Image (cartoon, rainbow, N blue to C red):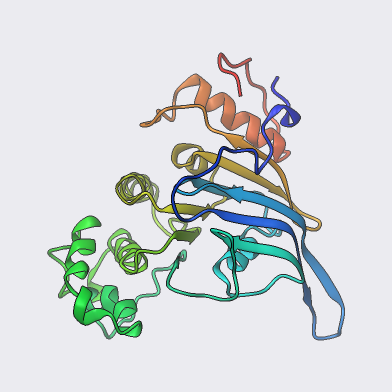
Amino acid sequence: MVMPGNFPRAGNGTDGDGLGEIRAENVVKAFRHHDGTEVAALSGVELRVRAGEFVSLIGPSGCGKSTLLRLIAGLIQPNSGRLSIDGAEIAGPDWEKGLVFQNPLLFPWMNIRDNVAFGLRARKVYRERKNEVETFLKLVGLEKFGRSYPHQLSGGMAQRASLARALVNRPRVLLMDEPLGALDAFTRMNMQDEILRIWRERKTTMVMVTHDVDEALYLSDRVVVMSPGPGRIDTAIYIPFSRPRARSDPDFLHLRATILKILNFGGQSREPNYQI
């Protein structure tokens, strides 16, 4: 059996050459209740995501996955420690950090084209970059639906529009919080392939929160396992399989069982024929 201690820890990767490297250094985050008591959400988190890497954060509810994602997005600030992208400290949200949530959160009164263009208009760069709206609609396969409204789209199509809206700003990093959690199983698998295709084409650093071990293994270069009380990084597992990946492959299933054991869900598995 390959035990958690044999896996490489977060931050042991090779140097990234492009833009979008994320670093969390000894990050601590606590939330204060209305009665004045504090609850520690994250403690001493150390993480490095290389430029262009696809990393999934996985762990039980309450382990701080979404909190860490919100910290990287700049939506909240740590109590102590440092968060940076390409060496610059994260001070708040900006267009260089794209966000995709479980629900698409499209503006219902805007058609899809205007939803995708919203960020460019807000940044006052729409006039010189308006042609990119069509580029990104095509990237997500919605070039024929620009005049449609959100209520006219399926759940998967709406989430594609949400991806296009995040990507049209050409962010350094794309942060996704359970982006496929509301979709049915077949649509979810199709969207996983879409996200992989976009990641390959754009080379954007991606960090995704998910509760789905199979999804994390299928998509990621690395799976970061978190544990609660307060939230911390347990281990980081580099996925040794080339893409495309077969979910029924014995090595895939073994690594799935290994992660489930780390998460205390047990199960028996054979020895793998790969080394990590």
